[in-house]
Length: 389
Image 1: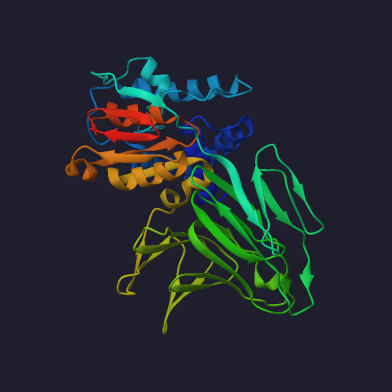
Image 2: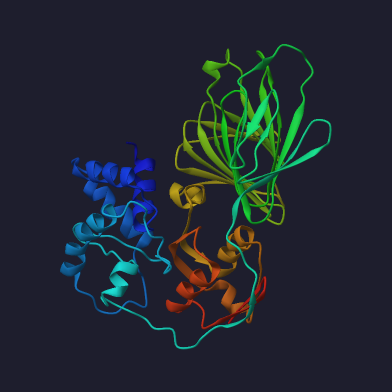
């Protein structure tokens, strides 16, 4: 199991989203020499509580880790804790494990002093849904529970899969997949490449690729995680992703592009393999764990090393925030829950938050967690609008 997959399992475990099979894999992985150190380092970096923490018994926390693993294994269907496991941390040797399990045990607590004002909460958790625009302009609504099938494509409402077929003609028919606010969707192209699309995203792609020619898709806007079928399996055909002011040539790889309409920057994060980013006359190569940030105002491009999992955890059902300003966090939550968020004061927008939030949690749980750790004092909900105080 590679490092990225191990980190995904750790996060699923800490946020109570791991299956029995996941826990078995994690236990086996932890037995290998060196993995315990990686586990501790990752947890400390991504889930450790950095402020507002009272005294705790470290030895007690360490002894609880194995108990928690066993407790979860006894349950066939894991209970999704209604208390968000933000700032969740684990310790095999020196770290912390802060979950609803330990909060019940009163290892440390921070009480909510006031009750939020909720006039009417019409906010739903995001789900698998998309609108498919066919080559003739007709549209099909895709969502869980609905199926769709033609000669070339089929969908079970959670993903859409195109048949493995290469076109020998020069005419290419394109489809468009649009993901609304409050949605996400999985797309499998005819060449086997997979794309996970986040909320408020749109992609344009061929129904079939022309044999021997460059495979081209366009991320019109939004965010997508790409796992591209290598050119060696397609007679050397390149794979290119277009987006606004940049072009990405893929060399059999996995990467994430974030290019939302209201943003002034496009972020391309390489997970593994190689990509070449072209902006005008400039070409830049990315290495794994590097992120390219393209400024649309002046076309400047900066490259930095980042924590990859923080950038792609949305695909695994987790929002992972590492010292993110509240205003940036609310942009992410607004897309997933299809809400509007206002701040009572401009200063509040810059308040920093650390934590991992489960995408399957309701918005009140998430806001209460942020409130419990002192990032906000209170909030109110009116229909689908939230005011942070």
